[in-house]
Structures are given as structure tokens and as C-alpha cells.
Image (cartoon, rainbow, N blue to C red; front, side, top):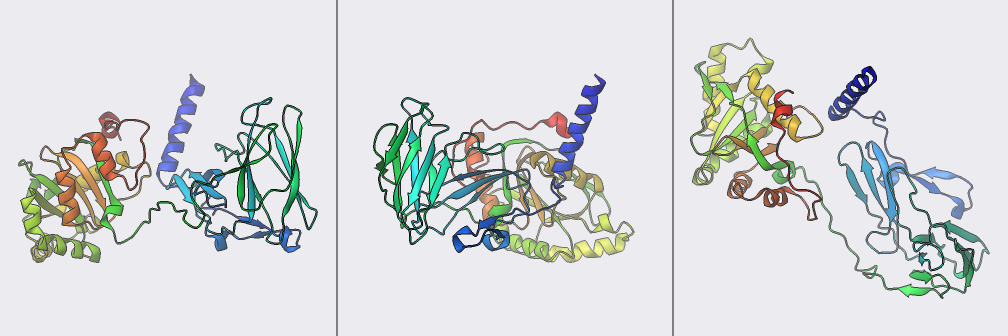
Length: 404
């Protein structure tokens, strides 16, 4: 039992370490090396920065495949840190390749263990690859064998050593083609799903100017604790639950994006009001300046009213702590709340959405319109790209959040 307790404690510390944004590898960047043999040099060149793959990810797995079917190899990586899955598209295609997909008849169907040898016509060099299952930690690359062919070369022929013991010889094959080889049969050209000139993949580009990129829609809204703040007169107040949506906006007087966001929301007050949204702008200035006088606080908040006809007040430390706990429950990586930061509550006080960074009235109104959708529909509204989900949306674990 003592060992189990120690193991559980170590596991908890490890989770806290990772969720706190710490790096397993000390922020070591990914590495990429180029084989210089084709240039007549017996060495590898570090092209990490040049290739653009030198992300400071805690990489755990890499799978290589011609994902977009354009004749060159792309990569998928899995990381401890976000993004947890990253697609690296190779755009250097020159059709200088030959690829084989093998299918066994006497041996196993996937031809695991089969070895293909290609003879190059000019250099007489032999290229060798083997079909493997499980070629890396937590990953499986494509079982298709992809051979790079120099620009001035042709493939004179080759042979396949099948796991059944059969040795199959074949003649010349055409560079820039993919072949299916069934054990005992001649290679047959595979039709590529898209011509290389037309191949495309849907990309997702993160923009620092898009409010939607920092928006998280809560699939299954959950009840929020009561949030309190201090008015300009020094009175204790709480966020009103009057049957309307409430936007709790954290801001600071020294934060220029905060000022711009509040000013823009003020211009769109009519749009927000029509959607039944009220804004409570909670200033965090006094959290870092506890000695600020009531007169100074009152003056700052009075001046802030020029930014909009909203409910203004100063944040209680406990209120910000509550919002930080909620943030840590929603996000696996636990980072301090940014400024500005907003929380959209439903008419019953349940959390509907979180906006990290400036948001817009149009985005808020859109989320309010979708607030009564089913959890699976809300999840798709909050996703940045299409796909299929492996499980249904889960409800929040309120007990674990409450004990955080």
C-alpha cells in the first residue's frame, strides 16, 4: 500500500508538472537532419531551423506517410505539450520517387517483414527497404515503401523477398508512380487519389487577430460559483442572475487591448442588448496594488465608464481564484489568465464560453444563439476543423473542480 501511495503521489506531481506548462525536455527544439550522401558527402546536415520543424514541443511520436498523395512524405507528430497533434506537410514534391504497397498471399496479408531491393540504372546503386509494423514509440508509419530516386536516375529493376521465402524479381518501374504488388504477381500501377498538381489539404491557420481562435465553447455547460466584486463606492456586489446572459470581462487600466475591447463592445451595446447579454467589467488593478485608496479606485472606475455603459467594479482576489480554477478545469495546461479575458454565463449562471484575449459582440451573440443546442452540436460549433469524435461530450467533474 505504501508503494501504491508513493506511486499515486508521484503521478499527481507529474500531472501538475505537465499541466503547469513545464517541459519534459527542457524546451529542447525538434531536430531534422538531411542525409548528404546524394551530394557526395558522408555526413548528415542539421536543417532543423531551415526546414521549419524546430518546434519547442515535447515530442513523443512521429508517423511518416504520403498523407496528401502528392508523391512526397509528410509527417504527423504527437506531443506532450500543445498542440498535441501536429501535421507537417512536405511541399518539396518533384515526383522523384517510386512507392510500393505489398500484399501477401502465402505470407501475412500486410507483408510484414518483406524486403524490397531496387537497382538504379546509372549509379548501379541498390536501395533497400523493409515493411515494418510499429516503427517508433507510440507510432506506426505507413506500410507503403517509399523510395527517393535522384533526378538523373531510372529504376532498372528489383526484387522482393517475401516472408514466405519466395523471391520475386521484377523489371523496370517508372519513377513518379505508386505500385501495388501482390505476392507472385507483376507490379500494377496504383491510381493516386489526386494528381500531384491538384493535391491539397485543408489547413488551419492560427491568427492572432481572430477572436474565434482564442474562444472555447463549453460543450456541456456547468454551474458556476457566485462571483462577487467591489463597486466604485466600496460596496460588495455580486454578478446578477436576472435571466440574461452575463459576460464577465477581466480588464486592467494599463492594458491597451482591454481598453480597445471595451470601447468596441460599447459601440455594439445595442447588438448585445438585443441578444439579452449584459456586461460586467471587472478591473484587476487593485490585485497588484492593494494599497490603492478608495478615492483613486473610485476615480479610475468613473473614468472607465467612458468605455461603455456596463457594470464596472474591482475584482475580489477570491473571484479571480475561482475563475482560475475553472480555467484549469477546462484546459489541461494550467496557465495564468490573460488580459483581457471573458467568461460568458447563461441565464442560469452556467458557463457557456471562455474568451482568452479580445472578443467581439458578433462572436458573443453567435454563441448565445447556439446556447440551447445539444452538447454534440455545441462541440462542433466550437471546433476549428471538421472530423469525427470518438466519444460523446462529458460533463464537468464538479467535485474535482471544487476540491482544486
